[in-house]
Image (cartoon, rainbow, N blue to C red; front, top):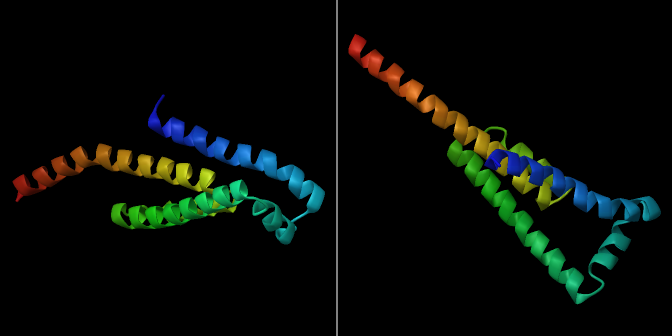
Length: 123
């Protein structure tokens, strides 16, 4: 399986699986943020996962913004909208976009090199 295909599959799974478990809560309670947070932090295991996801989200933001700047991926920061679902969407989506960007630059590099060489020879 190609890496980009794996990232795309992980993006879809990263949206579908968390939403599958969140939808019953949402249908039963609506967007009750207080109840959501109370249940999330109800025990040590919940707090562990909440802090893990929070730190992972911050890492995803820093990584996405820095890599987007470093590689000039203009659409990269848009992937952070995936955080509306979770890190499980935003991170693989950015990795997918990053992979496409790097691959397109790699395939365009020989062409640019040839163009530069012909330009110098025309000189």
